[in-house]
Image (cartoon, rainbow, N blue to C red; front, side, top):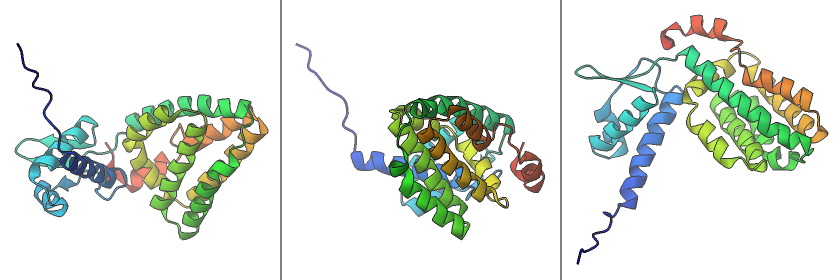
Length: 229
């Protein structure tokens, strides 16, 4: 009789540690702590995270698959530079999905304000401090909440895990004068248009909000030319 061997058990603590290493490195890349083109020091990261170099190397391989790092044998690992054509594709995908999803809430005149009120208050506080990264965190929470209200949890998960290239551009974009104020105002209008059932106005503000044409690219790219390819 054949004996069932079963699957090898997975050490949950080790799995969590590997996941945290991956997310931490990815966050440093997408929020520009690690600059495009910068060399990544595996040994220093392993020492910082108190792990062997193996989980760091595994994380970098996964990030290479996402085109966030470039690995050159014998030369090292570097943060990839920002490719505008890829950013445009990601923005377009996000726009198509979010317009459809929020329009469903709009058609129902969904009462969304109470659900996003805390996100808006925290965004306004970040705006007052001109804290771009804090604003972006609450910006994401705002959109995640709306997707959740529409029952589109998985769609938001896919968007949020595949848009790191766009996030890098947004960090630079929202750092420009008056861009935080503009983004916050668009959030307020989105809520009003959803609750008022104004689908045409909602579509217009989402087109501006998603910035499909990367309106400020002619300012950003020359200013940070070393970040782009």
